[in-house]
Length: 382
Ligand SMILES: *Cc1c(COP(=O)(O)O)cnc(C)c1O
Image (cartoon, rainbow, N blue to C red; front, top):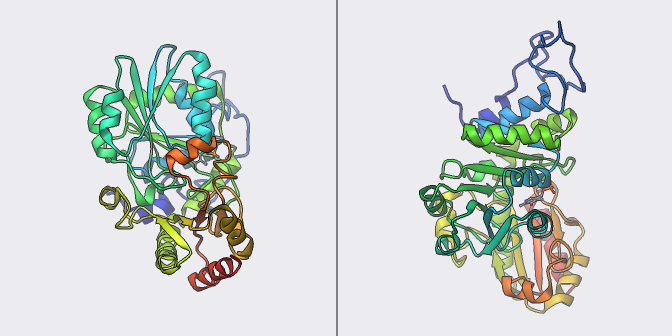
């Protein structure tokens, strides 16, 4: 029998402790495990290689993504780096041109030094992926929705292309969360999360995970997880599992609050554009509505009067905390041009569409009337 998402979020990988009956399994804060004789162990030898608490978390994440195998890492970036270690000198990767800044930095500044070649294309049109394929292309790296403009790529259309060519595909599903989007069901060979965001959900941990259905990919990644060693602690694995129990209810409320804030923002004369995957004037809203359960909890919008207006708006907010990161229960706000996307050159930002008046909100699960009253304070401060 397979349980539905909300049930799996609470129960998958987590049975009551066999020894004590503890409903919440204990955290195995142990680096090493007693062997009953040389080479005669009970499934665990050393915690970099495997830890019971991490195993539970990995099993839970696999279940939520509808995959067979999950592997946990010390951060989303560690997960990204470990996936790249599957590649060899001379290999080629096609990557979205609007992916997480740290992902771009690792590919461009680190992996290129090892002779791996990257082509960055606008993946919102699958034809661009098709056109970029070379004989040595091994991997297509997608992020959807993207940060901060929430651009959406058609996962099914792109994985149809990659599977025809025998190329691996990975979707960074951090912004959607497994509640809203299931990339493996749409044909992706791997799905990746920064569990720092919606998975953890309480802004109290840093972590990452990769889930796959492909045994061969899993065996390679498991080898690399142990060989490179960027694993999360048992405590962080436990904390992530604790956060996940409420993932479904959190994601519903994030989306409900977001849609109310959007209604409000669309009425404000100071706002030029609102960016959200499910808005009708979003260029890929059709695809978004087909592949996502809700539009999620992230909103970006342009203020007509540019940078000064954005700065004043953010200064006027009291409940929304000015901070990077996203996906926690508390609402956050930020100014992408000088914060999360500050390292991108100005001309490049203009090309992507990151305008000087852009504000990004990570909508939390507070009472929505309080959130709207806070935005009101921001506008009053313009
Ligand atoms: C935060 C983030 C990452 C990196 O994860 P860390 O846990 O910060 O290393 C990767 N992709 C996306 C989309 C992110 O938002």
